[in-house]
Image: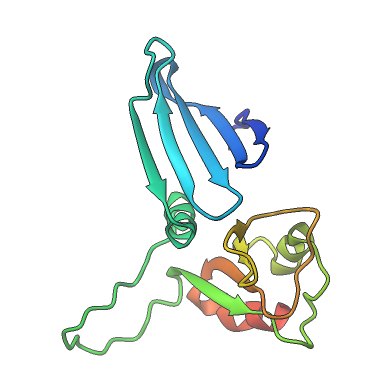
Length: 164
């Protein structure tokens, strides 16, 4: 995988702005508000206004992150569907609640990534005490009640729950 240079800038009182190159000289800008929402902006440096801006609530942001990692989703419908055995190689996104005796308590997100190993991706840490999605915030450790948003193969989910 090629390294991509991402410019990060703190926006006091708002959150963070991340900018990375796109095609034809354009840039993709992601503004992550401290209070939760994320904005995706496509910028052409030759124009005064952005080409487009999309606002996503925090819960949609984690789903978009999973899609961009290549995760496949199983869609549930309200209609009765024939029962089949789930594909164990399928990548799924799971929310894992951190209990009081969890080995992940007190760990930083980077430490949790190491516990998960190469077969899983930590997409974020959800803290119900705050409206924002905390994603790899080195200054905050995982606490009881937090939820880890993890993408992994279905066959590894049980082992991952035990690891955290």
